[in-house]
Image (tube, rainbow, N blue to C red; front, side):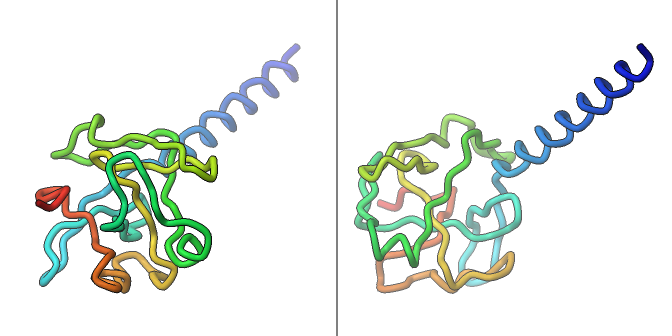
Length: 139
């Protein structure tokens, strides 16, 4: 009986730790960099971008575009201080994949950003920008 109780307690602890680790993936951060200002990142500090050709609730980045601009998706997003949970949502793209949105616009990574704080995709082609939560969507 004691062995079963110990096994169940160990399994419960394992599920708790796994759940916390999975939940941490959806924690958003607001960072700041001189010359750019504030911008959104994922829980690891990797920069998130938006595509100017996208519309509210619709992604136009497909196929080859996605190879360079992978989608950002978390089932649940924890809004950082100063933002509201309702600022974040999810769309189902035409390809059937889910994608996290900020104020209705799909979020992406840039394949060239390797470390936290990298923002090599900023201004790419005049179409890609970091997401400044103070001025988003830009007018």
